[in-house]
Image 1 (cartoon, protein in one colour):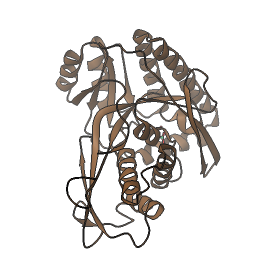
Image 2: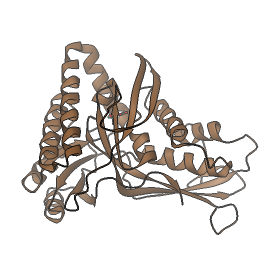
Image 3: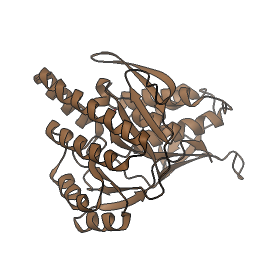
Length: 327
Ligand code: MEV
């Protein structure tokens, strides 16, 4: 409860995928981390339901409308929802997942379901995300934003990680199953992520559809998806050993595979090239086509300057931060 009567607040982090975007939609392993940048929501009692001053409409706010239907009674008194975010939208950093998980946490508090588990909340957020993504979405973004830290998805239970839950989704091409895990990192205080934003908006749904169309046209390209899975596994192993040089190599290798898959862009390539000399590894992160790249570096200032000189907007984060919570 906030100081003001009836005020509810919650926040959730951005996420950055270190390994396995796109391939994770087809069950390959992937690793994502929660960033320091967060999205904050505030709910205030009001005469009507609104988001950022405009009337709440399912068409304009599909995630929020879906979560309201799932978590609140029809008789819940209306609230105005204010969103404040450090996370750039449509840029591969999970702004819509952060919105879903923060709103889900705030709605759970509003309806006195404070004890509702992360598993249940991330499931609702994943369903809302999948609906908005035309039925195809892995639970990577929503689980990372809910759980925080480092999250690993795989089609099998990974013994080296802490298993959290199984997530299933009916998709247009059959049921998909993911095992969701968390990973305890070996601390290395000298390691940073520098995110570089191209400023080009590329909706995830379009990028996911692009890969689905490529696979439908040439089913043999599933080999490329499997190759990303192999690199993810190598990257995960390096992360567990705390070998950040090997983590960086795997990230750069992952990027080459993503570029060949057709999800990079000229703007991303410019920023990636600029960051390489001062980084351990660099790749696009998220759905690609624009949005952000990520550099793993021990020289965050130099790397950020190089990316800015190449035209990107940057921010720096450590690896693994708090998940969604009521504020
Ligand atoms: C988007 O952040 C990550 C993708 O793998 C899509 C998904 O996992 O649903 C491109």
